[in-house]
Amino acid sequence: MIKLAFYGKGGIGKSTLVSNLALLLAERGLRVVQIGCDPKADSTRFLREGKSLPTVMDKIRERVPFALSDVLIRGREGVLLAEAGGPLPGRGCAGRGIITALEKLEELGLYETCRPDVVLYDVLGDVVCGGFAMPMRSSYAERVYILTSGEAMSVYAAANIAMALKSFEGRGYADLGGFILNRRDVPREEERVRDLAADFGAEVTGALSRSPKYQEAEEAGLPLVLLAPESPEAGELSALADAILPPEERKG
Image 1: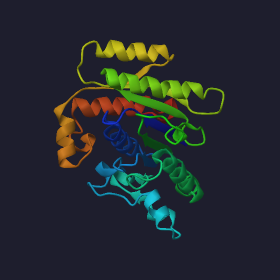
Image 2: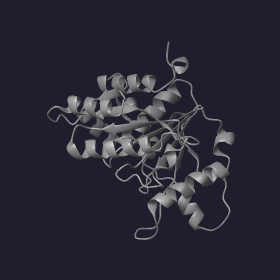
Image 3: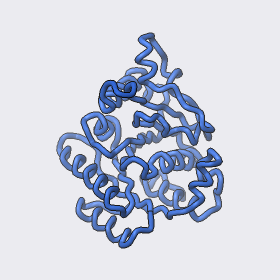
Image 4: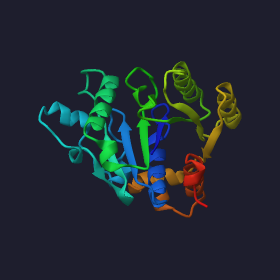
């Protein structure tokens, strides 16, 4: 089982990226689980035709027993989807909600029951508090990929996430898999992200072009790789899907 977490500042495109990667990996014949770790609970919408999921935290608040099948739903291409959810607005700690939800999914037997080949965690990364760092633990994710543009605030958030991960060295947490550039076409963008990666002894694992096709896909309620599977943008996503897999799992 390959367990990967994707972090980055809000609005940088994590959910778009993770949903497209989930589809591409499923098309390669892998059993894929995608888990949204954001109180907005919108990570999986592209794989559910815009429909929302009952979140783990919603079910916990109902204070009645529930089963894994109540919060784990099959989406496009058979990808299994779950949303951690969060507290009611103005109440509670969103980070604590992530901890509670992931622990509950484990308690319900997610990994033993589904036996996934790949688990993808889509994690909010503006603030890396204890709860949002939960997927970094090796019992959940093995590697963390950080999505960033070359914009100052995006680079700042990405550096904070990488520093948090570095602070866990020696404690059995996930490794930094690399940085993913989601271009915004700002000056010196590639240089800034390469320098950021070098500061942490990492690589730029892949790069995505700024393209109106992503907006077209969002308006259509589809992942880009389904809307325009032969496009250059889909090719970039496919190359990234290959790059995050171990060599034995990649396409020949």
